[in-house]
Amino acid sequence: MSLNSESFQKCIWPACGATFDLAQTLVACPNCGNLLDICYDWDHLPVPKNLDYFEQFWSQRRNPQRFSGVWRFHELLPFADLEDCLTIGEGQTSLQQADRLAAEVGLPPGNLMLQYEGFNPSGSFKDNGMAAALTHASIQGAEFAACASTGNTSASLAMFAAVTGAVKAIVFVGSGKIAYGKLSQALDYGACTIQIDGDFDDAMQRVRQVCPELGIYLVNSVNPFRLEGQKTIMLRVLESLQWQPPDWIVVPGGNLGNSSSFGKIFGELKMLGLIDRIPRIAVINAEGASTLNHLYNQKNFRWQQGQFSTTKAQDYFDVMRKSNATANTVASAIEINFPVNLAKCLRALEITDGVVRDVTDEEILDHKAMIARHGFGCEPASGASLAGVRRLREEGLISDSDRVVCILTGHVLKDPNVTVGYHTDQAWREEQGIRQATFANPPVTVPNELEQIIAAINQSH
Ligand code: F0G
Image 1 (tube, rainbow, N blue to C red):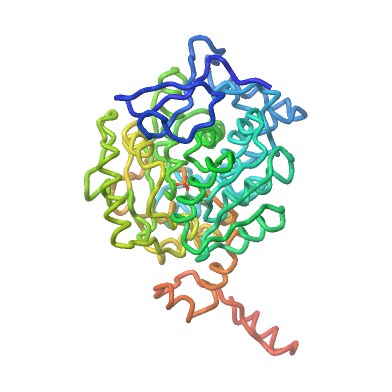
Image 2 (cartoon, rainbow, N blue to C red):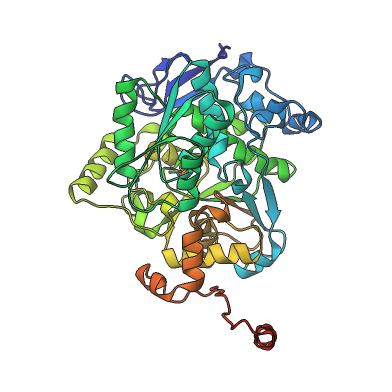
């Protein structure tokens, strides 16, 4: 098993720019503490001339790596030999043209598309990155891999560990909101599940302390290999659009791994001459977990080609910690106050001329219900993306002619409690501050009598 010799790790902070061998397991630059990228010496690698090069692999579905929606694009993340790349069949996801939904948010037919990452084996986009991180972990000979999680990363790690046997999974979850679909996955796949008294941000801090102490491989998105795998979400979107970039990619923001990886791949594709135009990225926070929105729109934090001061961000985080600020949103997947990929996300926003918005829990749940009313559905966090589209349409930033792709990050079955609460439970809705629940579709309760059942059906339409 070997790592590619034309690939290396590099500190993202230009003033440092230190490089490291791929055989080192790192989650931050040992010199300055900033995040790391996986970089490639493209001049010495076989880079395709056009993106349609990848279409040849559609006919190689019996090869597990080329069947994978991640490793099909190996030439654009070639850090390991193809035959060593771990796969459980991730990335068989689809882009749905959602015309009826487009009408709901004031877009013409053909201009709104939904990328269903919930179709991954563990039900969320996390499998894209997990395939890449665990490939590195297994080449490194790691015995244990760990993550902190709001639920989906843990489900993905637990499933990969169960299916491949490559590592043993240890997952840290908070004791507050964790969607039962996700917790049940970690338990059923046999992961050692550490539930700490705290939220995701606390779990993240702890797992970062525990991993070096016990020599455990960390697979959160501070691991630069994770983000290499997540780049392929954008490659599949482009593939579905016949390699024509859309105008907008709208994505929910939590720990900001997705947005960071999307910015990286678009920068790489442009630099390699494989696309001529970069879509704009809109990152959508939940209002109760909107650190990025606050820093970007109120504090004017910008990457500024790497002039960005990470100390400034750290100072802000320290103030938040001192005031005991905790995140709070019904979209538990993105209930995160201290996004670990903040700097990379700011860089992605610069590369893509991006924007950031936040939306309320009510908007998130209404748009989640709308998505399901017109398609395959999604979990709450993913609803933030469509709510973001509506907001940007109202502001006129997304125009009539713009082609928009919403990333639906997790499956509709991940969080049944929230879905059932929204549709059926007035008291639960009040607790969450949901006033209207415009798309609530409660069951019609009827006695077990044929005539009454028929009458109820007749009344329903
Ligand atoms: N959507 C879903 C369904 C998620 O599970 C997450 C993150 C996000 C969006 C946010 O993505 O971090 O790339 O900005 N979930 C992580 C977890 C934190 O632990 O499962 P991001």
